[in-house]
Length: 330
Image 1 (cartoon, rainbow, N blue to C red):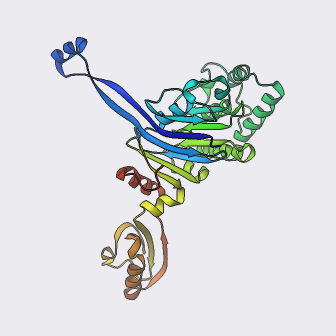
Image 2: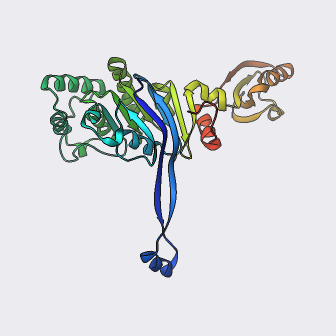
Image 3: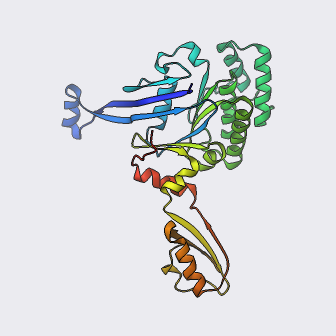
């Protein structure tokens, strides 16, 4: 049975419109005008047990709203969802004990207390046996290398250290499902890698299902094989990470190192992305790569050549911009 089943999930907000000027403000006191804003529009997908899935989209696309509906924090306007066999909006205790929601911009730990005290509170809330709690806590603090920081006030920790503590708190009750909303936002590369490593190891050991939103493609590439892309409130791609490049990557990056310096006419072969000494990067249409390479090699002496896909960030940005449903969308 799927861990998550979303069928036509929709969330619409009724937003009051404020008129300009003093007269408009006065009229608004007794005659308000509203407009409907569709945050999520008919999203459907399923996630199987043990999957690690990235949920991508530009700001305002509806990612966080979807996660909140899946966790039962807000009610859908239309459509339905089943998570772990429960209807999230019913907020049953048995459901809430089996998942965790981690939001990178929200704190669940007490600011002025050591993280260890918040961990003990979680133990009481979830009625965790002491032996299981101690074993899980030792495992998680070891994975994240924060054994000596749990007795330090949360407000005295760095952003990266606080995020590690938030993740530990979310995993103490050994959830079957982990919903992660920008867990590495604002973190440096070292902290990002530590979070990625912990999630990867925890998944390998426990088989927890994860749904991750992130603007850092390093998180996605390190953790997820499958990607859901949402833009303008609609799902536009559901498939393997590699498939995004195949479907939306219209060009290839051709790197050439010339024996006698970059030719003056290089721009006629493709868009020059970068020049460095005798080396140049060209953006070339995928269908014309062989033709372009043959023409260059026929006219110039080339010491080295490589062909690769553009950075994933550029391809994802194209998906966001186009924002049109594909035949793979759920």
